[in-house]
Image 1 (cartoon, helix red, strand yellow):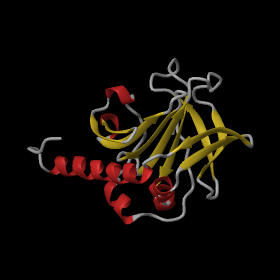
Image 2: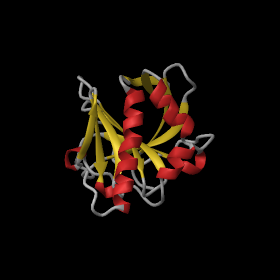
Image 3: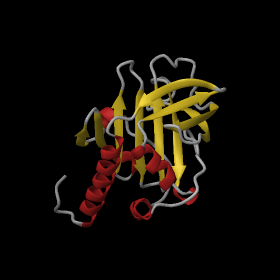
Length: 190
């Protein structure tokens, strides 16, 4: 798959499994996605390019962007991280990275240079967590820990505070349940 990485997981959360379906990834730029709610500094939005999948987005003072979302087209959770100082990220190039929530074990992953408007847009890399590899541990760590650290070539490239991540995780699931129920009821409003 273009512009994504797969993170190996252990188990599958029944609630998330009930929400997720199947297919490839194409992310809508956050500015184009309808807003569902805000939690602290996070915005919960709906990505119409991913079968109306919900995502949470936060932008930090230094300009770093962290996006975690559900992908109903691909049975996965994805992460998009970008920073205006990461000009050397090459679109489509693979990068071996690790990420760790709090003091927990690192997740090894192969990230890929990503852009919302390839290849001329901001420097991001994207990560995908597939359901068949089990996403419950990953999602729980996101919700329970207070920061996430990203490593490249054994160096810390970003350490981001996850303020309100528990509430964000719950609101993200609520958003997806709401959007999914709307699809069953064509007369329901967002």
